[in-house]
Amino acid sequence: MTITTSMDDASNRARRFVRRRDVRQVFLLWLALTVVLVVFGATVPARLMGAGASPSMHAIKNTMTLFSIAAAPVAAVVWAIALYSLIAWRHRGNTQPESDGPPLRTNKPAAVLWILLSSVLCVFLLIWGLAEMGSVDAAGATSDAMVVDVTGQQWVWTFSYPQEGNIESDQLYLPVDKPVVFHVTSKDVIHSFWVVQLGIKVDANPGETTTTSVVPDRIGVYDVRCAELCGLLHADMETNAHVVSADDFNKWVADNGGQSS
Image (cartoon, rainbow, N blue to C red; front, top):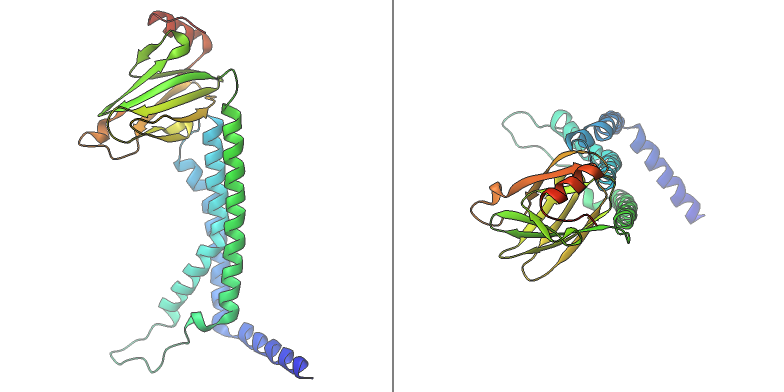
């Protein structure tokens, strides 16, 4: 009997809560904001990142789109409550408010619901991210991958091709659709090797070699930058990555005194 009465009381409180005018208005505001943010997340972030030139960059753009959409309902809740509070619950006049609403942290159903939904969302995003990272790494790390040694120093990049006769260049040249493994290090301070449109970024540490891989799939000229504050001319530590056809790459190798592998 006691259990039934408690359940009836909880059900009545829930109905009264839902019927409240302010709850309905916050819900409608949340619904509208969710739609707007979902549309925004599905279209804008990936476009702002520019055209991708590798499966790695495509995966990053897809992940950014998915994360933006998944975060839309959560952001909409915060915005809806904040906007409604500023508009409808704002105190006007020079006198102090007569009373304040109960703090949300004492509302156990709201706290439990928030923790559960946030946990489910975080676990989903973690699994998705790990799966995407695994698939991208597997695509680039093949036995026939071309090796490029990358050395950073204040404030230039040097690229060496051990399989092509150890030729060196201050600009990066890669054949299209060929898996590439970068061996990255530094001569002085910590740098960060970032080929923007290829979607790869890895630290260049002095005395250590880090690796990353990619498969360029679009011919073009792309940006190579340092993404780690490395000194006075950090902003000038830029060069170009040229993704060319296999024939053009072999010609570039020959013109620089190397031999194609």
